[in-house]
Length: 283
Length: 237
Image (cartoon, rainbow over all chains, first blue to last red; front, side, top):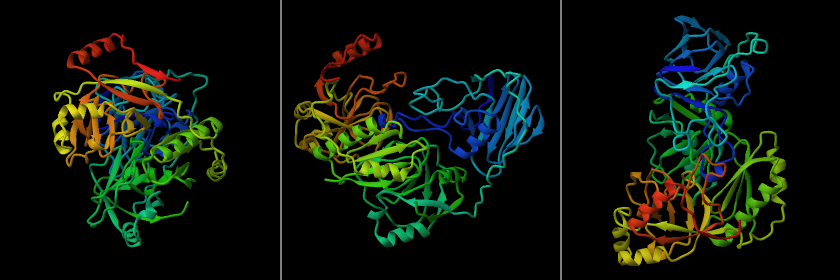
């Protein structure tokens, strides 16, 4: 069992997503930075879809009742296990009754804590991912107790290895595909949108990241159509909205771009008030 | 009318007919969606439909290009309109539950009584579920009741609220911000995450609204709490 001593700002349990219910309006949810979560699970020999703890700044303080193995991946967080510094991106053995403190990262947004065997919390509609309106909680609170597996001493041996999480190179631009409604835009507007630099709004969250700009633009609403994480919409008043993991399943705003999966990961780690430029690529 | 097929992100195909809200287009959507889900069960994870589109979300092992080719040459039977059930949905059209009833009446030169009569007369069709878990997009709203969305959405619309937005009517299946005009409340649970089939309606199902009193609303809520309420429906399973 893992006890939440301090929940942090927005800490939740996420797995690889709630598949099979999107036709009922149920969001996909799941980890924001897929590759980071995948790496954490793989390093421990977990199923890649196992649930883990997703956190941001300020991060949680957790107490491990039982011995286990953990890995922390994602943005650059400073870690202390029982007041001793430990590394990110590699498996660490945790004795029973240990406390993990996670200190703020200087860049990036999301971190991932995986435990051997995955977090064994309740599944709702086939997934352990927290989502407002679907699961009873949408984030962890102080005092929560998260179920985990006991270690199997013969099978659960990890030979230490390190995965270097791909560095988030902030001079990279965000690669985007044309969205299904891109062709509806006038050519001049297309060029303006692609060449502009946007500021990520600090109001961004798991549902959507908002791209702030000074452009005087806008386009008509569309008849409600399917959308998915990575769909970038433009509203009649010119708001640009990049839908993320907790997004609705359908929407009435023009879908001007679509992010490839690695771009959703990349975007997820761009902090509020930082800027991003776009690069249009073909599928 | 043939739809357009395109790749949608890394692992999905989008099928779209012409962008209109029409029964003919919707039947095409339902027919192809049903065929894809039955025939390509191993290639796909799930589909999402809307008025004129289908998003087919593919398994990561499925080739997007090959799958798009396969479905673009399918022969699709006409959608059997007799499929689907017709549900009777109780709605309390009192101003306590429908704060915008008088506005809707005034904007359309009708009395509140007429609004209620016109709203509860038709058989509506569930076009698809979207916006919120279990939220049914319904077609069939009488033109006399159409209303542009509120210029400022409410930060909180109560669960069960029956609303009008543009040419659409629908039911808020949970507390949510919303910009529709609220004319009544329905006590039923439209979304049950504890059930394997978590929603009340399938696309293609039909709904009639039945006006009930505040007393009946309370009674139904009590029956629901005791799992004693039976939703009336006619038609096939």
